[in-house]
Image (cartoon, rainbow, N blue to C red; front, side, top):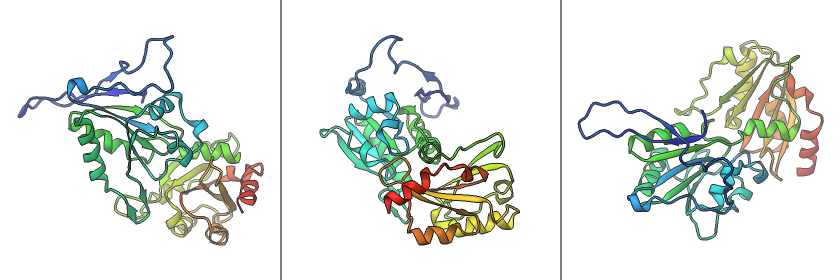
Length: 297
């Protein structure tokens, strides 16, 4: 989906007109018009309502922000941000901006998702332009789709600003290619934490050979994931890795096989946030992951 502004075609009360989405480039300047990095998002207070920008903060390194994300963050008046937003990115928020933390850690949610949805709607209705800052990309395991739906159903205008997803950041930071013509013709992103707190994934699909599997938010279920992948046919000696805090100064990780990965992670004391990478491409790491682990240790 192209980055853009989306609106809900609100119908009068009781009307049966279906809601539709339309993309607009009104939020972007004409070609050739420079955008000031410190420019604040355009306020809509005169119309009595604001707008929400669902902004991808990337994997943690502020140098990996998009130009548009940087402009919105440094010019924000209200920011609602997640636990996975890098510290260096949070530091870019103007001191005068109102900051609201809505982070989610395992078993510790500052706000439930329905409360975050309501907060975004309320802030926009108060006339604020809101930067909703999310780690990685808003639409890749970032609940951006749920928040967009809630905003549009409430008649609130929203804009989606993509970000570099954690898997792409980890790949570049470690030298592990996500795809390779000789080793992986398929790339699969999966979540290790479903809405009902289970890890009931499509194991047969994930255990196919010659593909790369990247599991987000799966560290707490690592033993289950590795066991299920092996029991569904993936070789126990398949290369695998866990990378913590990729692209940040805290980056570290371990190499192992699918069978030995849980023990290697325990021995290294790796904690969330972390990505699990499984597939032959992991063996192609030129040493960046191990070097990072030694530096972090």
